[in-house]
Image (cartoon, rainbow, N blue to C red; front, side):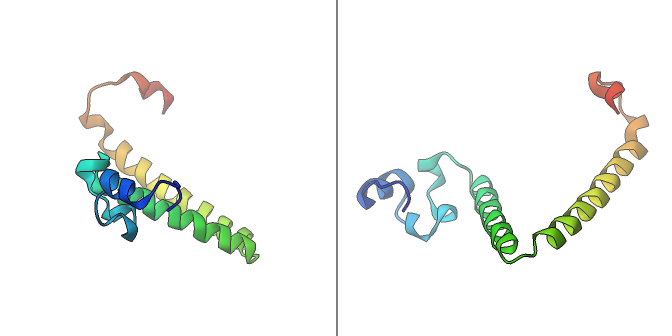
Length: 97
């Protein structure tokens, strides 16, 4: 809808179901794999939700909780990787850890 191109061109370029959304476009025509289209659509929806929450005055609460959750996830990822680091050969970025 956003591009301004006529629907017959969009259908030619994106597939016959383009009006249903990006995840319904023909990946053989767009050369965008379905998993990438889903990732983009989900993150656009999450960004939209974040803007709505900020406008509703919930920004500070939401951002603080997100920072906490991201920190926990980062620490869990680091712990798992470091616990298994002895099983891999040295690599160039190792001195950055």
